[in-house]
Length: 282
Image (cartoon, rainbow, N blue to C red; front, side, top):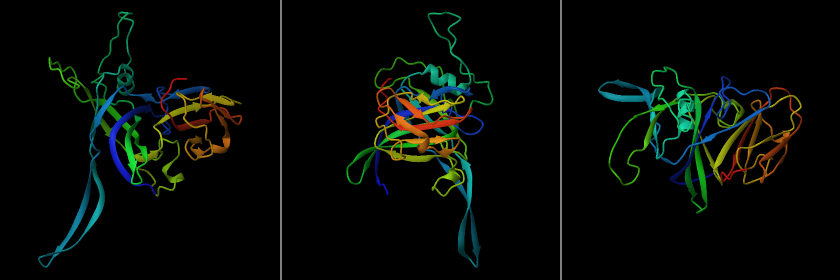
């Protein structure tokens, strides 16, 4: 078992999710033969804590409290994430809008899409620093498999200097999910939960996510950045196919090119790769 201290905010990733709860990177729907990757947010600053309220019943009689019992969660609070930069690609993903360069081809136009009542659902991964009680530096990722994100405030202006005078803030609304960001249902893990709001994942290096929807007979796909390890036996990198552990389906991982070789796939097979990386370009 791992125990340790948490400090620092290193990376944040966002993926869209499909109707089956799989991460779909920057694509709302994946075509057969298509590969997509988590979007890495630019310069995260902080995220407030997820809070939830629990309903309880108090048993009282004879002028004394006889007992109390929890009755489950009655409210899930939204939380905020702050970025030091405005990220057009991230904004378009979470708002269901697009970046328009047709109005002026040398420039770009975006909209908050604030009147859109139902923003896209996605997954949010926040990677923090973690040091074990033995003094080993690692990372801990809070992975929320079902969120909607919208701008918390927009259009502020200031002449202030200093640190991050005009950051961008977003509100994260969290819902439960039956499938984890690994592609595995909670029920197929040893977590002892049928569904939940997030998982904590402790790793030696930061992580990223690539999803591949196979065409018939496909034998390879490429990760979005270089993995730090070519391991594919289930120790450091996680591979799933159609919601089931698929380490035996992976036959090789190239740490220089990011190429992953697999046994010949069937049309529409969904491979999810959660791998350790330093985010080096391929």
